[in-house]
Every structure is written in C-alpha cells, then in structure tokens.
Amino acid sequence: MIDYTFQKPNFIDSKQILDLYQSVGWLAYVQQPQTTVEALNNSVVLWAIENKKLVGLCRGITDGKTILYIQDILVNRSHQDQHIGTDLVKRFLKKYQDVGQTVLITDPEDKTLAFYQSLKFQEVKPSGYGRAFVMDRRFN
Image (cartoon, rainbow, N blue to C red; front, side, top):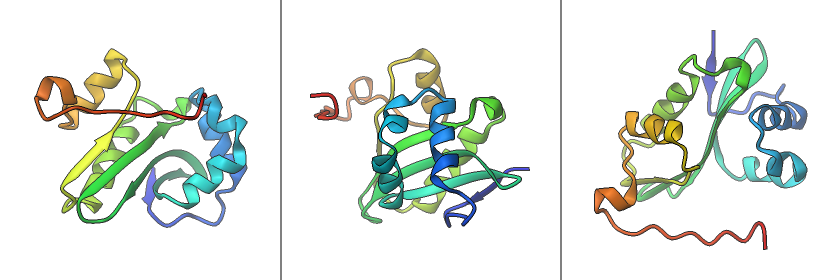
C-alpha cells in the first residue's frame, strides 16, 4: 500500500531521492545531487512511500493564493502503471484547490499529453488561454 505525505519522512535520504530520479532517467538531477536536494528542501513535496521506500513524488512551488507551479512528477519505473502518478497530482491539487492557476511544463510526448489531459490540464496554445514562455538557463 502506498502512503502519501507532505511531511518528509526522516528515513528518506539523498540516496533514495537520487535513486528515484535515476530510475526514470532524469540524469540532470542525479548529476547535480546537492542542487536536487536543495531544490526539494525549498519546494512543497508530496512523497509517495511504500514500506519505507520512496517510490514517487510531486514537487511544486506556490504562493498559496494565486499560482501553483508543478515542477516534478515522477514514479519509480518499478511502480509505474499503478495510478501513483495520478494520485500524486490529484492529492497535490486538492491541497491547493483554492489556488487560482496551476502551471506545469513537460516533455512533448503523446503519453504525457494524454496523462495531463486526463487530469483536466489544457495545453496553453490550443486552449486559447494565452502564451507560455520559457527561459531555460540550465544548459547555457
């Protein structure tokens, strides 16, 4: 059974965190372990735990009133296709249900598009909502 908590369990260490990112192939996070751990410490994180093992997380930042930005949603490959990702997003959104806008940026894959649309997210361009802009300085 998966347990979900916004309170970081004391048994989760940097190794479990980096192993989770490694399991989904997000190597930029693994290659900068200190940055990854600090980013998580400075974010709101919903942890998915099974038998004291980190199997997934949802990470975001928010002002608690007008904007919620979801940065990472990841589930260990060994636990994918069990609706853990869906549960993470739904629980995260429920906690911040009074926040006006939720924004996320993700990879342009069909599977990803279908996942977020199933959770009622809309692509900015087709929705007519506005324009989205990104400045990514990580790889300059």
